[in-house]
Length: 134
Image (cartoon, rainbow, N blue to C red; front, side, top):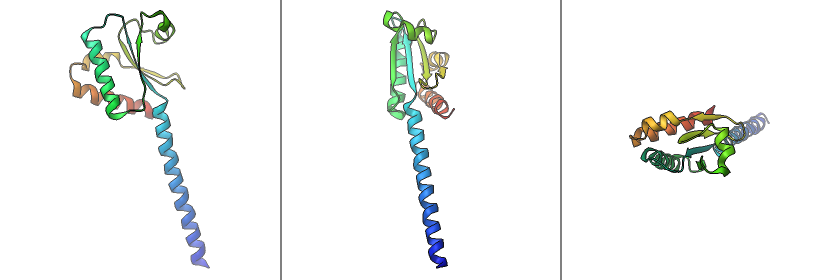
């Protein structure tokens, strides 16, 4: 009888720990799905702006396929509201959580690292991971 009780207790503990791990895994996925990467640009785009877009898309494609990338022309009147919300008047790169309103401006990073693909990818990946965790 004592062995039966121990076995039942062990089964319940194992089941609860497996469920908790699954819940944490789903929570992480849902956090990724709540963020966006937004790049603002003006009508006439420079080489660096185009490179930032290319490297950002590549990083998302390699590591974060479920994170949407939005490209926003600040000169398009239809984008006036979002451009004002982010105070973007030209090229800018942001991480954004639309549920919480939290944003991280990566513009300086993007311009500084656009010339080095490996550093850009590694650092953008780290920024995204840290943004998801916080």
